[in-house]
Length: 353
Image (cartoon, rainbow, N blue to C red; front, side, top):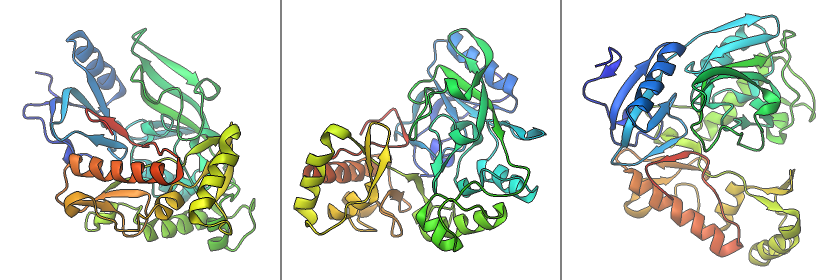
């Protein structure tokens, strides 16, 4: 047995922010990039499916667990060369952002408080409060499972779009490290999000000290139950469960007419420019479809957050089946009322919505 392999695989519930998921058939902890590559190669050679686990903040794992090898990416640390910082994939994201801000480096502060690991950020193009990692990523070092080689992929090859990249939905590339460009002036990225601008008391597009922006973002996230707290079941979630839907240009008029026909002609529907169409607010649609904060799923063991309708939460003794039942109820309710289909943001492992 590999020295890093756990003889009795633990439940994934112990490693996910939802606190849900059964055991993997095999569990390996990889403390270096070489260990990650070796563990993936060994599983492949054995014909085993592989699940990569970082911070566990973007996974919904079946109650029966994962029928293969789970590789826990436990690499940590970063190095800096001028404006470029290279970070290990397993490094906790918010600890890294906090250290950047403390060192007087700006650019990522609006992404403060997001749970999970650095390696997950390019996969789903993590974003919040008007910023995305795509704006700062220079390149990614990954293990290419097809060629069985480690290679560097530049940012313009990653196909970044809203909450996605070419790495999402495929396990062909295993992220080992990520390189970011930071601002040594200590200034934040331009403030683009209205709620954050109002909190900071600045105009859209303004810059503020990175530390001030981080403090404001953390305050806003805490108010929505989006900063992890083991004692607060509103944080037992995968963050925003549904992505904001993008309606194609050709369908915008019909969709908006249907929505206003339900909620009233005098109601302004939140909408934002997006590639190929218009982005709507999933949280707004969920609330107008009749799902209030704290809305319970069947049995009440899973519910919408009491602070934010976009988060589906484990109230302490939920199962993955409970959570998915609630997700289906919300998805179907929005679709039936408005004709808009919401799609999950977290990865569904050995289960379907």
